Amino acid sequence: MSFRSGRHFLQIPGPTNVPDRVLRAMDLPTIDHRGPDFAELGREVIAGMRRVFQTEGDVVIYPGSGTGAWEAALVNTLSPGDHVLMYETGHFATLWSQLARRLGLEVRLIDGDWRRGVDAAVIESCLRDDREHSIKAVCVVHNETSTGVTSNVPAVRRAIDAVRHPALLMVDTISSLASIDYQHDAWGVDVTVGGSQKGLMLPPGLGFNAISAKALRASQSAALPRSYWSWEEMLGPNSKGFFPYTPATNLLYGLRESLRMLLDEEGLNNVFARHHRLAEATRRAVRTWNLELLCLNEEEYSDSLTAVLMPDGHDADALRKAILERFDMSLGSGLGKVAGKVFRIGHLGDFNDLMLMGTLAGVEMGFAIAGVPHTAGGVMEAMGYLSERRNN
Ligand SMILES: *Cc1c(COP(=O)(O)O)cnc(C)c1O
Image: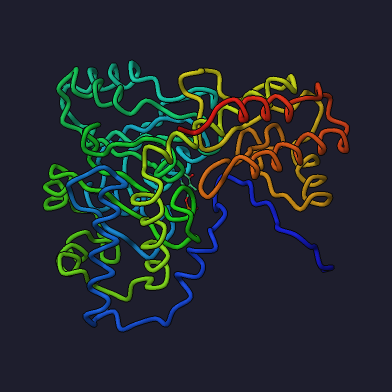
């Protein structure tokens, strides 16, 4: 490999760019995780994560990927053979449903076209038909990272309440947490699943569950086997800032730093506004290029990533390859059903106006190099939008 000067542009929708401050914060000796210094760190990051999830309830932090946190949500609350209602918003919702089936759950996956979010009316009618209340959980992905579509979680809550169904509501926020507004308590969610490597601006390696009182009660009778993922094992030591097994101490140093940046210095509402503005500039560029967004509903546009449909007969992966080779920028590939048909621009995490301009310039130059038909000027359009509008 030859040396490439300047920074690599990591514009996939996670893992995201890790700020230098966070990298430096992790570059410390690993301490005794049973000692007094650790307890302070443990308490600070758990309290901070409560603010990120917008909950007063329990939050558990696992050394693990988001997929592990998906598994934790299910094994702590459900029993073998329980019925679970899921919604095929895209690749990640499909993967979660496959994981649930492998655990021995009876999954009904509502079909989706990968261009829209969850239709709460369909969930409501499934639950209305379930008179015996055999469905124990409704699981949805808040921000579907494969499609760039953000679903309306409060509408799902209202659908469950409209038919007075007792199912738990579980939500994957892995690519929305700390990028797009999300309120675990106010939206009546029972288990929220998160990960470290997207909006939280950390390397991969931490998974999160936010847990409602109702979910905690369900965990007392849930019969799926669990040990590593057991909430009960975690919550005891967590109350004193400790963990039942060796935590990812250095990632927690990083988390402490990113929480200070997000919560205390920038403020969550400003973080959300920044993501919205950069996402809107991206969408304006795409429209100017005369290309189509995968997401069909304006009110469901994702503020953390944009999935762009390629013109017929043009391969998204050939474009991504050209951009990586020429400009040292990684863009997200199309996953599952939309492989080769879309590319994804990640605009979440540690990201600002000029990073977006560099990203969009790389895409527009890539079109020219790869021979992708488009109208030039998307970059100019985004520049105009960003220069007219401040963040706050
Ligand atoms: C990234 C992502 C996952 C998978 O997380 P891993 O850390 O790769 O296990 C799941 N769901 C969504 C919505 C994601 O964006």
